[in-house]
Image (tube, rainbow, N blue to C red; front, side, top):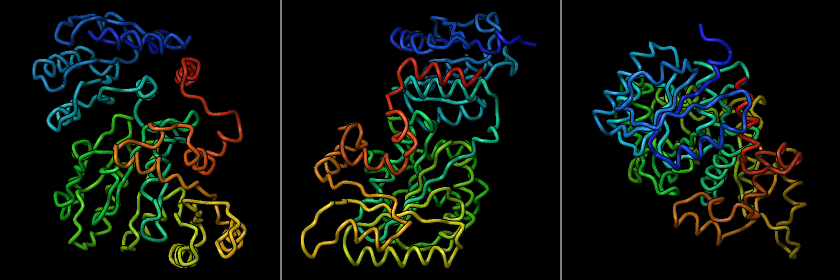
Length: 402
C-alpha cells in the first residue's frame, strides 16, 4: 500500500518542453504534491511510471494514433489500477474519445489547456472516484422573458466566470435546451454535436461514452451540449430524454449552465425543480417587465415557492429620462426578485458573437462582465478582488488534495 508521500506524487509523461515547463511551474507552488516528469513518448515507456509509485499519472499523447493508444493500454495493464491516468491530447475526434472512455481513464483534456484546468483534473484524480458530499453539480438555468433579451450571452458568460472562478472554478458545461433555435454553439464558433435522434426512443443509450462524443469543447475549457438548430421543427421530446441528459451531465461536471427556450415544454418543470439557481433575463421595457412578473407567478404556480426565480435585467441603464423606465421602477415592479442589472455594452457583445469567443476574452474588465459577476459570484466581488489563478492560487488549489 502506498504511503502518504507516494499517494501525492504525480508523474507527467511528455515530450512537449513548453508544456513540461509550465506544468512544473504550476506544481512547484504546492508543498503537498510532488511532480515527477518523464521526458518521453508514451510509446517509449517501459517501467518508468511503476518505479515512481505515484498517486496519479498525466500522459501527453496523440490519441488519434493507434500505436500510442496501444502503448497507453500497456501502461494501464502494468499499473493494474493503482493510479488514475489523465490524458492530454493534441486534438479532439470522436474515435479517440470513444477509445479513451473505453479505457476508463480518469479524465482527458484537449490542448491548448490552461494550467488551472490541468491542476483541477489532477486534484480530482488524486481524490479518487465519486463526488464529495459537498461537491454536487451546481445548476444555473437562464430563462428569457422575451425574445432577444440576451439570455444566451449571459448564460455563456456565466459559464466562463464559473469555470475561471477562484472559489467555484471547476469543470463547466453549457446545455442548450433550445432544440429549435439554440445558438450557444454558434456563439462560441463550435459545431453542435448532440444528435438527439440517436437517443429519442432509447434514452438509456446516452452514457458517458456517447456524451463525450456529443460534447463540443471550447478552447477555454468549457464544454457545450447543443443540437443542430431545426428552425422548421417544433418538437417536444419526452421528459425522460431531457432528464437522462441532465443527470449524466450533472454527474460529470461541477457546474452546469442551462440555456432554456422561451416556450414551456413538459420537461420545463423538471428542469426548474432541478436547478440551484433560476435566472429570468429581462430588459428595461414595460412589456418585458410585465411579462417577467407573469413568468415569476407561473414558476411559483407550477413548481411552488421552493424555486425562487431571480431576475437579471440586461442592457440596464440608470437613466432618468422623463417617461423612460428607471431603476426605481424596476425595483418596485420586481421587489426581492430583482438580482441586478447588466450594463448595455452592444459593441463588446457584438464583437464577441461575431468572433465566436467569450466576452472576457475581448475585455475581461468590461462593465457587462463586472455587473454579471456581482450577481453570479457576489462572494468574490464583496470579498477580496478576484485574481487570475497565479502560482500562489494554484498552490492553494493543490493543497486541497492534501
